[in-house]
Length: 171
Image (cartoon, rainbow, N blue to C red; front, side):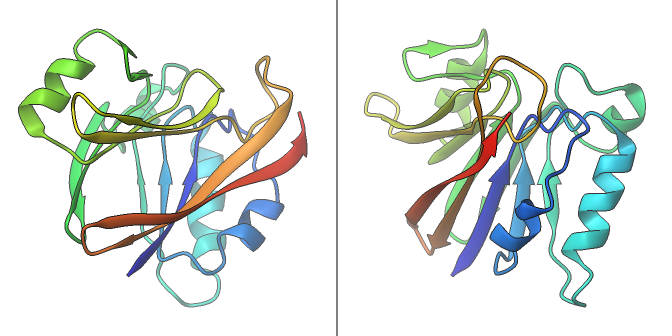
């Protein structure tokens, strides 16, 4: 069983409450628009402060500079337990995928597709492609969203379960 904290669109702002919500997570995934290398360093340092090494997986977003792009890819494919995952910042969602995303899903057959960018929290299943889509909304203060959000969920073997939407407060 792997407990995952999903965050996106921090835009250089990292709420202290994130660490309370992610304290029991085994991994943290960031769906892009970190905003600064300083935020990445602070996130990694705080996640590992207890001595438990918590991996940070992520992709760069459209506002991220070359330094961040040298650390994180545009597209990330990996397997967590028995679930194939595809992550891309600008990805859209079922029936309205960004250009090329549907093709990637069809070719790689992930069971979970994660994106950011829109600042709109979504968890929806694509029946046609057999793939769950998650967008954690935005945890930062930049953008037009009204409430800052995160997602916490569990991957247990082939199951994706116990999905929780967390509100961090007003932007």
